[in-house]
Each structure stands twice: as structure tokens, then as C-alpha cells.
Length: 358
Image (tube, rainbow, N blue to C red; front, side, top):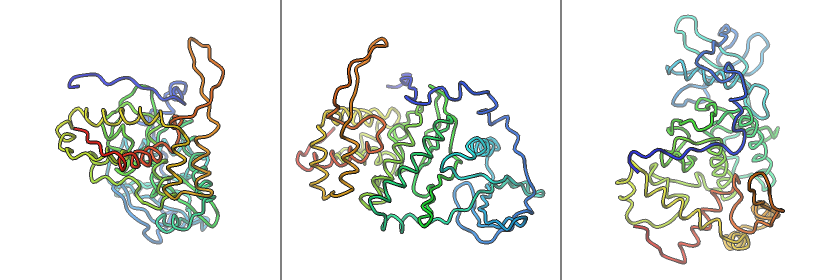
């Protein structure tokens, strides 16, 4: 509602990591990077470019080691300091791209970051030949990277195939591009203009600023869906307002109402909450039957089914909890399969029942 204060929200895990650390750990604005001699690196070829940087393959002339150099475009110094501080804090972390060095041109003062080099296979080619086991393996490796950065109090905020380097021959995965990453502080409001559209969580699409690490888990779920169903991107909205409805796949002839409500995002929120509440009541056997009807079988079906079986929950009150009870409906909170199963089930429902939301 106009003028209302958003409900306070805190992460369910790793909530107080930065609260318990010294200010020096997360205060990147006060960080002073150590700049090395750029002459130690010789550029070989251009690998690509992004909104904030250009990336080159290079050679460290002191030891003949192949590296990757990310030359940063002119941006606020605070943003550069943030990326460097985060990379330094995460250095040595599981499946996190390793920052080798930081250099700066002595004349132009242009900064550059030097990373380990990964023999990456383009995801559009790689996904076509991944086996069920490969998908499980690489998703597990990516989960390791995310769990590590989250345990260090850091949200990546731009998880997508372009930022996950995979050396398929060596079965090595690295999570890269920490330019949008940020330190998590409970109940803090953050910029919603992060992540790429097709991988944005619902929080970003409805301008909810008090998000947390779970933002990365939604993005990972979108990647998993792309791998399994060979559809990239899995959710393909034309703009942010269209992207809100993409995971729901409900026919809404009056999308203009979403645009009318753009200042409050009220319509979007109502749709998401209403459907997700119903989604939590759907029996697991219905999910499994839906997957079979869509042609999912073998190891892929086993993988998806494994998230729904042998789950339990407890009722807690004032420090006491009940005996564990079987969980037979919905998708467990935090599951990376949330976006995928939500979309599949909603789609089959709307094929059978033509509802209109106005």
C-alpha cells in the first residue's frame, strides 16, 4: 500500500555472520587495495566484455602461468572496493574463482583484477550433452560455492550460466563475477537492480528490498531447470513485469493492471502469495505423476523425486518441538526445485482449468 513500511525479513541461515565479525571484514568503503605492477601480465586475446568490464586471457610473465585479466570500466570506487574486498574474503573458498592479483595502470589509473584461468566450455554447448549424473554433480559443486559464500556473509546476486565456469574435462566448476555481490546484514534494504532478468527472484521483480541469500537459490533453481529440460532461459519474460508471471504461467489477459500497480506491485504480490499458498498443499504423488506425464523418467525423475521424499517437519513453540512428522505436500523451504516444480504444476493446472485473474 502507498506509504506503508515493508515487513521486516531476516535470512533463515547465516543471519548474523557479519554482525559477529570485525567491521574491517565487511566495511569495503574503508578498504585500501594493494595494487601490483601490471607489467607482470601480458594480454593474449580478448575473451569477452560486459557492462562493467572487459575480459582478456593473459600470461604472467614472471612464471609463464595462464591467467584471466578483468579490466574494469569507469565505475564508482566504492563498487570496485566492494568486489575486491569480497574476492579477498572468499579467496580459497570451495569452487570460488581465485583472485590472483590486483593491478592498476600507472598512467590511466585503470584498475584490473587477475584471476586463475578455467578452460570453460560454453554452457549452450555443454548443457546439450550433460548426463543426469553430470547435472547432479555440477549442481552440487555450485551449491558448495554458494554455501561457502553465504557462510561468509556474502550474497552473489548474479547467479546464471554465464557466471558459472565449467571445465568439463577436468570436472571443475568455478563461480565467477562478484561485481554485484554484497555483504548481508539482517533487515537491511538492498538495491533490487541486480541479477539478470531471467534469473531474478520474485523479491526483485516486486521491488522488495529486504531480501537475503535465498535470492541466489532461486537463480540456481532456474539454472537446474534449464539443464534438465534443455530450455534456456527457463523463465523467459519480456520485461520485469512479464517476468513476474513467467513462473506462474497463468493466463492474465489484463496485464495492464500489473503496469497500473507498478508503484505498489500489489497485483504481483497477491498473485504470488495466493498461488504459492495453494502450491504448499499439493501432494507429492501429484507432483511425481505430473513429472511422468511431462516425459521425465529414469535418473532425472529420481533426482526430482528425491527432493520430495523422506521429508519431515516439527511444530515448535517456546523452545519445545514435537516429534518429526512426514512431510507429504509442497516443496521444502529453501529447495532449489521450488521455481521448477511451481512452474510445472501451475502450467498443468491452467491447461485443465481456464481461470482469469482480474
